[in-house]
Image (cartoon, rainbow, N blue to C red; front, side, top):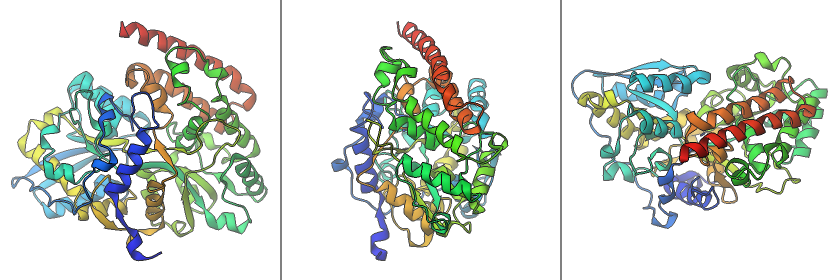
Length: 483
């Protein structure tokens, strides 16, 4: 590949893909938590309206006096955190700015930040899912409205996809965008080659691979269930079995039971490969960090991993042997098999208290503008994150995973869109805390139960009938609340 072909004009790539995805999305015309869109998301600019890619504007100056900012994240190693790695360089350039990191447990992040939002004790700046930032702003006013800090130069450094999910229904911008995320699958090609196994593109090919790897003592999919949240790749299976196509019938008018929907095919598939031995033994005690370690040690053939976690694999010995792909399809399903999860799904919120302190907010804004300069963009790439930026960047020096990710983002055949969580989240008025979590948590718990073997394929019908009852209750509460 010629070097010039690796110069990515990210604005045009993201604009074309994201707007294409929006045209195929949910009734709100929005495109995915790794990205939730609010009602305002439907007015994302068309690709033809996007300005040409430009060099990012110079970073805004930080305040001259000493200022300390608290920053909340779920990633403890700053070199693996897209904000942490940029913040370290920003502090070198501005020695008077001190950024103190608070690391939260990913499993309890939403609960913790929800409590802090209600008590107005949030960190000055913190990473969170875009939908939850918007919800919290709307419900508690403990998060700052950042609209006034988006001057023309800053907006010009962002792709049209950047702010879609960080806007309220009335157009307020309540966060700074995180990465342009895809949720895909890493494969250790060296293991596939060693055992003469094809990297799977269909469910049948995956089952065949599991059989070979199991026979040779290799874990096919590095997936533990001690942490309940890393179910990204399997949430995509729910999408490929129609959870989006049938969301109105499932979650709005109740004309289709979850237990009688095509989505049962996704759960059956998880149970089937679990029975074949696809997952590590004793995976119920395995954390996500341990799952990643299993993959990077060369002992597992595959792992489901999104953009914001790729930094944990970038630079490891297995990176050179990896292939990052959208994963498998299900030819027996009638749903769109090219629909894949991605978007600008997360962001960085600023507490209302921090916004009242001029020095703090000036430093926070300057830091985030620096992220969208060429230097900041390249630093983010070192953590595996492609920012939704207009900056032209040469990806040659950033390794195979970053280059593979850019190829997925630029995949014209892919329908990049929301993950399965958004099928019901957007239906139920984009209110995760009141409605979505009541169904989303047990929905994900069934995925994990099938992976760790505490539930089998034979249990799926009964378990989905339990989910039917939850959907019925939540839908009833939602309709009553709407009146």
